[in-house]
Structures are given as structure tokens and as C-alpha cells.
Length: 162
Length: 399
Image (cartoon, rainbow over all chains, first blue to last red; front, side, top):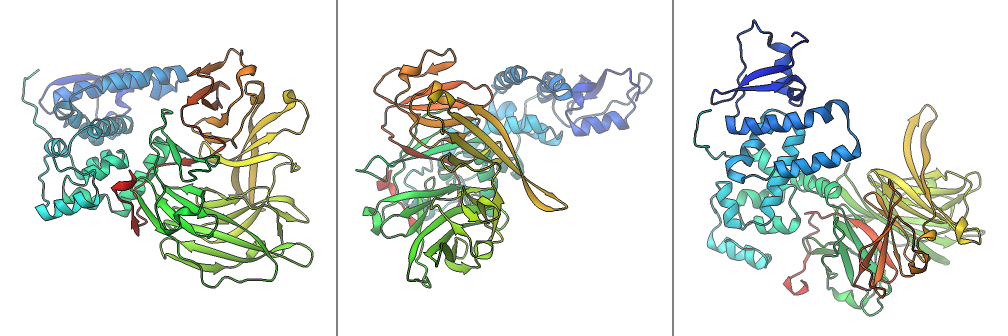
């Protein structure tokens, strides 16, 4: 790879092209391997595909670009504080529409920071949900018999199946 | 960009587990009704361990025991990481419920209680409302001049077990000596006798509760050995072996020392009030780290913090504790010493009890008012856990 390359082009699973800076791509192990393996110079035609849809990839790249300077150089306490606030704003998104896709992408791209952040966001959102809402977003069927439900309810008076 | 309907993804089980381990126990109890897979998952050893680990680092609580409340020695307060005093879990109701009790220790989600009159013990998980009455040890020796005992409670991730260790001391020919050591293991639910080892022939002279850290229980300012002077004593929960650890500096017995943990290291809060004037009182924080070299195992002690909180707070009542990055006390009479720029007060009602926190990085003092009377509380670090002690289930009546 030529050292003059500052950004690489990747394809999303829906076939859209995205640019990501080399320093931001380093936040992901698989992207980093791609940097080492694939020729990204101008005379190379090959554009690697990332199995993440466009809508999600936009967010993932946004996260990488924001976090790259700190990951590469280390940062002061005030920077870390600012970044935390940015993370909170960044994570204000719909669970089904995008958060779960971010989770899958962060897991697939081995991005520990984003994965932790997305898991924590999902957990915080779940705290306020009812059991039936949880079943809906995770596509889970209630497989308890009515006797089993009754027994659980007796054991844990706070339990609700609704 | 193409406009496509986003298909809702089915998250793989490992991602779901990673999300669920971050939920508070209260939510998990609710969500066991989601499906059988989840209910079973919450009972697996690996999930319980992962959940505990996460809760210890991400969601530290403080538990107070209000020893001053004679009328209700079972009254406990719980404070969350946003410094809100949340719940007042009631101690399990048992036959010995009229017997006053104290907390021996809090380790990995379980609290060990000692009932003062009956000298019996209980292991309690307040988050899932379960308690286990520890049976009596049948083969206790009763020497002619039995004087005292000391005790510790802790968890070892190596053997994945909780243990209570109790050391009995009798009056010897010249000195008080250790004559019996018994260990209770939660996994076997039974007591057994273990070897005295390094305790053979030494003279212990305190009766405090041990501090459990990283699979080892420590007692402070403890065993007197001719060569070493004042030592610390440790008990490895996994191997059940005692070790003597030399104290970092010429020990001053008048000092008020307390074991704690700071940034995942064992630490000692040393409250030096030897001088007569308040200006010269100092508060030190030492951290200790074990290192192994050619000469064997050694402990390195580093003093990382010194301050004089008495310049801000005239009266610090409770024994201090470390919580996150702050030293924590209770105080009731700091008003006259105010006026310093870096003191903040959250509530200025003068009759309220006050909690004092000193940030170890910024040296900033914070006062926090509480409406509940705490009165000389003992403070313990606590983290929620799903660990079952499975014997007495405390019903809804106690909520």
C-alpha cells in the first residue's frame, strides 16, 4: 500500500460507494487487514465490499471518523468527556430501524468501542420496556404454558407477561 | 443511494447475551418471562459471572448499615452511582430476626451477616431476595480460656465459590494464640477445619472483619511476629492458605487504618491524627501491588494521595471508604470550616446528615445531604448479582 493514500473506497452491501480515511478504518480489525492486503492505489480497480447496508455504514463511518483522532493519539480528560457527550447524541436512534444493524456491524467489523456503546444503549432502552415489547423487537414467541406463567408469577410478584 | 426498506435483523444469541448482561437484576427478573431460553440463560454460571463482572465495574453501589439506629438494626440504605439513595432492602426475616446483626462483608453480590447473640451467619443476595442460613459447625473445640475470634467473607473467581473463614483465639501461656480455623464454603454448604499454617504461634490482636479483594481476604494491623512487628494477614479463598504481609512503614498503632480497593488494587486508607492540632492531621492513601521476583513474593506499597480533610470538615464520623474515585465519609459538623472555594454543597438544609466525598484526582470536596439519618454508618461496596443462595426466598411482603 502506498503511504500517500489517505482515504479508501469501500462498497456497502447495497452497492453504494463510501470513502473512509485510513486512520478511521484502523478502528476496525477487518478493515485494517483489508488495508494491508488489498491494493488501494489509484491504478487498482478492486473495491472491497463490506457486508453492511448503506444506512448503517454511514453511521459506522461517522463513528470511526469521530473516534479516530483520539484512538490514534490518546486524548486529554476534557476530550474524553466531549467524546462521551458526542456518543450519547450519536446513539439517539431507533432500536429496530438502525441500532440493531449498528450492533451487527460493530460485531462483524470487530469494533469494540462501538459494540460496547451499542450494547449499552440497547440495554438502557430495554429497561423501560414491557415483556411484550421485548418479545416484539427480538422476534421472540412466548413459549410458557399458562401453568408455567402462573408459577413464575407466584415466585416473582413483580413479573408480568404483558 | 438506493432507497430500500431496512429489514429488521435477527440478532445472534451472543449479541443478545452481551446486551442482557448490562441490565439491572430487577429488569432481568422481569425479562425471565420473555421466553424459556432467556429464563434458562439467566441461571447459567457463565451468564451470572459475566453479569456480576459487568455490574461490579459499571454499576457500583454503596450499602450503609446504620449502627446508630438501635430501634432497627436491620435498616440498610443503598446508594447508586448517581448518588441517589434508592432502596432500603429489608434484611431477611428468620427465626433469629430479633438478634441484632452486622455485615461481615460484601463480595460479588452477596452480603454476609453475623448475628451478634447467636453467633450465627447468613448469606444474603438482596437483589434477588434470597438468603441462606449458614448451618452451625459441629466440631468446634472449646479450650479452657477461649477469648475471641475474627472472621472474613469473600468470593474467589478461581474456585467460583464464596467462603466464610473464622479464626478462634485462646489465652495461651504467655500470649493469646490461634487454636482453630474453620471455613464455610457456599458450594458445599458446609464448614470444615483448615490448617493454621502461618497462624501457628503468632499473636493476633484485633477482632475486625476482613476485607475481601480479588479472591483474598485481608485483615489489617494484625498479627504480631517478633521479627516482622506488625503484619497484615491474608487468606487465599481458593487455596485456603494464610500469609503474613509486612506493613509498609514503621507501624503506628494509634493510626486509624482501613482496607479498601482503589483502581482494582488493594489499598489502605490511613488516618493519621497523632499530632494535637487539626492542621497537622493527614489522610493518606496507599496502594499495594503484589510482585513476584527471585526472592519470592513481595508487596510494593505506594503512597498516592495525602490530604487534610479536617480543614474542610470539622467532624468526620464514619470510617472512610473508597467509592469509585472518591473517599467517602459521613460528617455532621463541617459548617464552621466552610468558605473554601472548592467545596460544593448539594443541599444546604443544616439539620440534615451530610455525606462527604473527596475526589482523589481533583482533590475536590463535595457535601451531599441525606434526609435519612445515617448515624455512624458502616459503608460497604456492593454490586448486584444473580448468584443464587437458594434456600430462603424472601417474599413480596418485605418489599
